[in-house]
Image 1: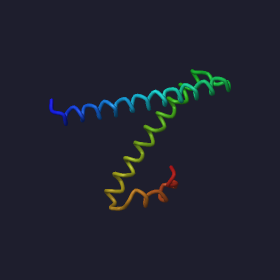
Image 2 (image 1 turned 90 degrees about the vertical axis):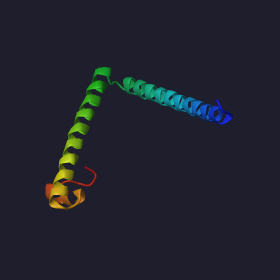
Image 3 (image 1 turned 135 degrees about the vertical axis):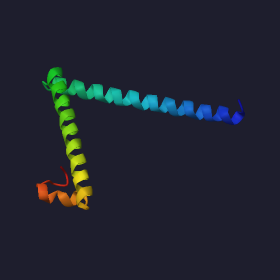
Image 4 (image 1 turned 120 degrees about the vertical axis):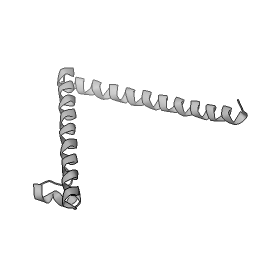
Length: 92
């Protein structure tokens, strides 16, 4: 390998190390958050149910956004212009 490819490999390896360290820190922060929630009286089953409901909500919201997008294309307007018609807030 040329010296340049060795430098790129070293930079790539360092980037991976940084990414791994970042993921470890995020994992630790999440563990702390879970511990705090458990100490506040939440159960793992309750947290898992809540997470499951959030995933379901996000899936439904994504489907709604997709439908609004298609309707907007058909009507030749922006999605934002459809929000008042369906009593939606921009934050929805």
